Structures are given as C-alpha cells and as structure tokens.
Length: 258
Image (tube, rainbow, N blue to C red):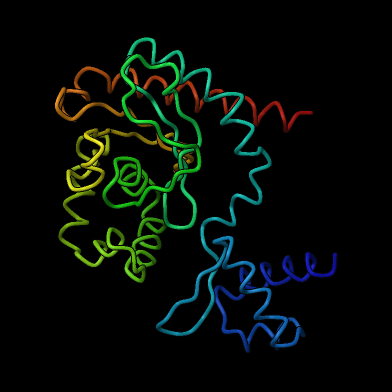
C-alpha cells in the first residue's frame, strides 16, 4: 500500500512540475533517492514516464490518461468490438483485426481470422507490430494528436529496432504522414512482413481527438493492392469503426450513470 501511495504522489508531483530530475523529485516529495529511482523505474516500465536525454528530466507520457478512463480496454475489446468486427467480415471477407498502442508499438488485441474464408496467415493476440512500417502504426501516428505523435517519434529515434530507426529519416516520416492523412488510411510498407505475402490497410478508432485503437484489413498482396482494397472496403471499415466508437461511448456513459 505504501508503494502504491508513493507512486501516486510521484505522478502528481511530475504533473505539477511539468517534468523534473530525480534529485528535484526527491527534494519535493521527501522520498530517498533510491526510492525515487525504484518508483521511476516502475513507472517507466509501464510507459507512464520517459526520460529526456537533453536535460535528464523525467516527464509523464500520454499513457497516464488511461488511468482515468474508467472503462477497461479489455471490456470493450471483448464485449463490444469483437461482435461488430465479425459482422464486418461477412461483407469484407478478408480478416479484420483490432490493434492498440502501448510502449511505442502496436499490439493485436482481437482478430477475426477464424471467421474469414480468406485467412492465409494466422497471428496471435498480443503480437507486437512496429509503428512506422505497419498500416496500423501509420494510422495511429497519422491521426493521434500532434503532441503525442511527436512524442512517439522522439522515442522511436532512440530505439535500436531497425524499423523504429526509420524515425530518424524525417523525409520518410513526413511522406508517410502526408500520404496517410490525405487518403484516410494507413498502408503497410512493402518491406515489412514480405515473407507473409500479405498486406494491409488500417484506420483509427477515435475517442474525441485521441486514437483508442486501429482497425485493419489483411489481404493477399498478389490478389489486390492497398488502393484497390480501400476502394472496395474502406467505407465498410469506417462504418465498423464508427459503430465501435458509438458503442464504447454509450458503455462509458452508462457506467458513469450507475
């Protein structure tokens, strides 16, 4: 209980100071330096804070907003999104997946591959996908708030992952963002997962200005191009995303009135 209380105090302090060094946090909270470092490591492991190399200060990340959502992500993914996605597959036929963001990557949370007649590659719920070369990562970055996008890109630049290092190529990033925003959907980079012989397009599921998840259609690369799939199925995919958004909004409203 004491550790939990200290974590909350540290989060409140970081929020009040708008970023601080470990020494400043120790002085403000009265906690010992070893305790501060233990707490910072715990928060960093969950993605709630990041350390700015240029000034050695720790800052809260956008992920802390999840602490106030009140409606568990697992709840709406399983009880709301999954049935709506299954309905979409009846029209689209290609598999539809739902993917969420965590710690500078995208993670598969729900898949309809068991219901699609065109499934050729099986993925696991929980599989990690990089941001800059996947349709889902590109959709998330392109439609999340600008400050969040810049924060994620800054973190990716420090990553040792070969795909994350593309964040250092500002021209590549800007071309990707411009294309995705112009067309309204993200498409997978041809150099990623080519061994699977599939491609995908993805759109965001929104909560106000925030992206809460992305919705993707995966298809055989030799059968269609991303542009052809978008022409045929983008409207249905968008309709599916809107249905999920409305259902989640209603669920949250109902929870607040209980």
